[in-house]
Amino acid sequence: NFVWDFGKIESYLDLMFAHHQQTWGKSSLPIIITEFGRQGITPQKGPWFNEYSYYLYSTTITRLWMAFMDRPEVELTVPFILPFSDPGYAQQRGQAIYTRPNYPEDSKLKPTRFLDFYRFYRDFEGIRVPAKWKGIQANNELGHFALATRQGNELWILLHNAPDREMTLTLDLGYEVPSGDAKIARMRWEGETPEDYTAQDLDGTWRIDLTAQEEIDPEKVILAPEETAIIKIKLPAKALERKRIEERFYASETIQPLSEKLVTYQVNLPSSNVLKEDATLVINVSAPEGFKKGTTLSVDVNGNATEFDLGFAEGSMDLLAPIRLPLKADTLKTGNNTVTLSLSQGKTWKATIASVRIDTARIQ
Image (cartoon, rainbow, N blue to C red; front, side):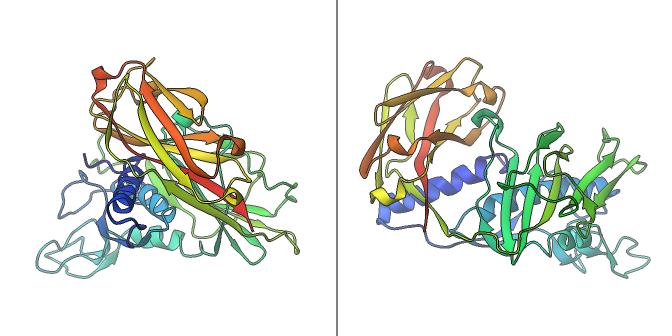
């Protein structure tokens, strides 16, 4: 119940937004998340025995941060990393930028690896620009994160590869990037993955690059398992600037049982000017024990049918995750758009649709 990354936090925020709209007829109020982190890294009061513990904690913070960054209603988030360990309570605490590792013999504060963790992100800012994955199927996209910003004539791309396998990707900017114009800063575990995260003798280290110095080929960017990276690319002096507006439209209905029987949602799109580009249907699905391979979700949008294999969630306990399906612009219309859903094997899974939304985009 406490694993909020890998889709669950997005689905909960969607449900809250849709419920607020359904109940009060207006968009969600601004959201402030005052504490989040990763449970289970012990001892809670410290000390943490190696930097692998700090690395594990950071990966969860990164995934949740990137999910929050993609939510316009989330205005402020505060990870549970204290500025310094609590005097009089947990002087050796691990979740702190500065801690007292030698207390009680020595009460002097010393920096932890979280100091460099924060420094890793300090230059990532600017105006958001569109970034989307291609070539990743909907059943494999959970755990892949990408955010891009523009600062003057520089493009900054924040990437995170959460699965336990290496990923090779291509950055397509629409033109060939000159050699030397793309550099990367990496944050990842390098070395053997310990079987016991509390072990004191580890053959590995948490690499944190504080600046992007390593030159890369945008045609072949390799990310290690659970690696976070910031890529900086020089843009042409007169790179085109256009305003792209992305909007989310929610169905009013929430939390409906999903079975072999059809479940219907209505999503209202206000005007045809939002239908110039392809859109995305986001379905938030819940099931206490996931789904077995071969369980098919049938989806119909205004008479255009498709199917989706829910087998990617086999073995997932307390599943709640978004499924993103592409929609052609000509599938949608101004006014109510009808979305109907059903399962090939519904009763077995006690499944529920938490919420449904359609994401659209237009150039201004």
